[in-house]
Image 1: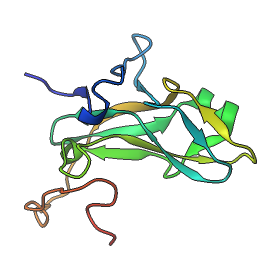
Image 2: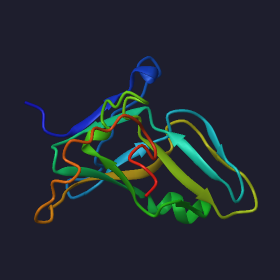
Image 3: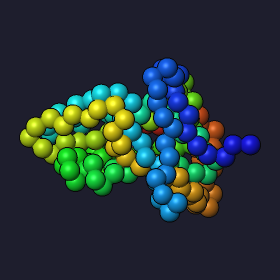
Image 4: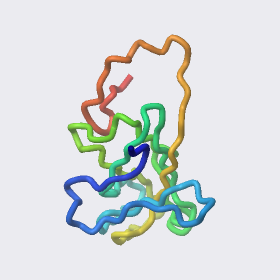
Length: 151
């Protein structure tokens, strides 16, 4: 029985995408890399595809964190500080749960990102629920970014 991990999305099945790994025995994060060559334009938000989706238990999420070396060397940050991939994002009908890394370039020049560049780390977390948390229990995720509403 599988508990948590990564799979390659269908669109990238033949594009030689590697599943994320931890680099050392005590590493918390799984390195996520660019699935294709990209350029992060100056003072712009760019979505970098990973070619990956993540599966996990219902009471878990995958936190996305920028890799410090990449961020410092290139003056790049995640646009939302930390990305959150919910368990029900996996295999959603809109984009199959494709993990995209939303970055912002603080520089005045473009930053090339070759395929395979490790951009972020994914860390699996367990979360807790508040008492009487049953109001949205019947909602089903149908899409990707922003699919749970704007309010």
